[in-house]
Image 1 (cartoon, rainbow, N blue to C red):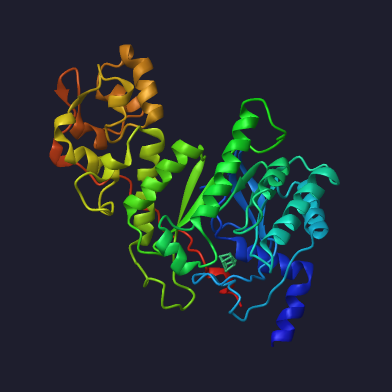
Image 2: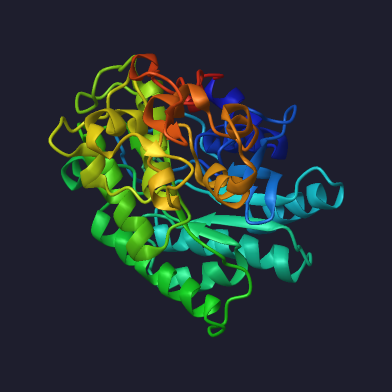
Length: 401
Ligand code: SF4
């Protein structure tokens, strides 16, 4: 049986299937999950140029590490395959020319030596740019333990370079991924931030790289929501990250150090994304979202409405006079709506007009007035946007075997 599988996956088609499935749960954009194009691992990814289809694969699934949550860990008996740089570059360039993809998202397991594996990934990007004149999008993942100087080479050929932080707590990381360390990851991120900053300042030798992102698993350790949001806040402010992606953890590998299944995880992840948006776009600080209360966000209500209910002195906000900062504290008013409201204020006469500029009256009404008149009673407060269903989990990688 093992021989049959080995043969099957050694063909290019087999590698594509196996390494495409294995890369499925690495986030490359808000709509990255669950949409492959027939038998090709092609997914829509959010890039600086908009949402576009990208080929999303691992370079290899042969790993010398033993992360407790991962179906690629060395101790598991699964078929192992690797691309050759020239093979993957040719394949990507071909798909690009046929208009099937507009980019490549390349991650990898750590095949014996992280520096060597990383070099081969960079070689793939180099071949694409230099031999195939590839002008599409490239996102490269930095492998844990690869020599930090390789970051400089990666940003020379990739539009986006990133490293996964996995979880916000060092102790949790040691338990589930003993070969990884936050100290190393932050070293990589600082170096990336410096290189990207140099480019934005008009210096440096970068042609492509425009920003970095990271991904954390939610529920793989016992870290609380406050730790995720504080970590994200630090990454946005100190290192200028574009996005932190939160992926729900599911226990697909049996290991005593892993937490049990958590049925509420999709809702928790949704609440974390909402809190993340509040610290990125609305001017909230983590201490405000968690002050004086538990360390996890409530599941039944969105974090902004929750904050509003705990700060009754701030409300009601008079929408005809409030400044942008104040408007952004009102549930149901986002940055775009606040800007529209400010620029159209002189033409707004009533609640209907407020709706026209995008105010969600159901949510904003209980916390605001228009020309002194309440827009709704506080009793009508709702929990806000419900959680999305069917978010992907990490690790369902070999369920087809
Ligand atoms: S998470 Fe990455 S490094 Fe860890 S076992 Fe899986 S593939 Fe290897």
